[in-house]
Length: 353
Image 1 (cartoon, helix red, strand yellow):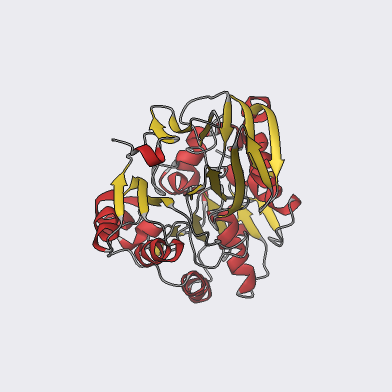
Image 2: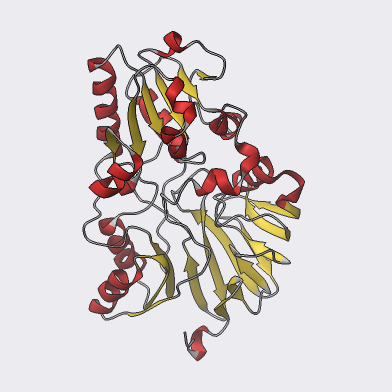
């Protein structure tokens, strides 16, 4: 894409979004010397960067996932704290996506650019809410960037899960959730809804749930499913990666009701593909209404769309009289892409076969 002279200090490169005067990448798709990381998901926080700036929580997640490969050195910052790389001002503010997730607010020569990373604006008890920052250029995702995607209230979807648990006490409920963010959010919503029983975990979810608890997120009583007799799990809720719903591991469960928590459960074909008897439309990404409201709220004259359903969101921004363009950055994954989180960070997967 062509970059206007006014925005020539930030540009997409094969390695990701690059800030020229600051000499750093934002969420690089390959190891970089200096990187600003928006959050801990594997398609944004890759291992091997030399110097990383991120929130305290994102650094903790990266270290838990990648160990010594997470990066050579870290600059841990709080939300709202201002730092500089050369003459570029950098400030991280909450993105509302997962614990520690941040938007990157860049200021240089009187211009402000906000790189939002992945974000949502619906309530999540496990992380800080999205913060609106007005700017000249807003860079947004578009994972659910089509008008058909309007997510229901997550608490209502959890109420459907609990109603199913109450109606089928002779079965267990096997809930497919992603290891970072979704697992912890669904657990926290279950607790808010009054579910106080032990929730059982596949080994792939244990490390990050424990980390959330160490970072101050109360998830209640959790226990590994490994080693328990089949009958002990009757009537219980068990969390696992979505891929585990169809493998040999799930066959050990007592007559499971299979559920999947994902924004893609709005699409019936996706629900069937996942084998979801109980599809739960719970997403950690903004839906169409949240995306379009954010474009209006930030009051930017120019919108860049990094990944997802870009065309519709670009068209919407242009209909408001804004300049808009699709960046089509490589290396970004959809919310439901074949358990990308476990595949990209295999060390978080416990030996629970």
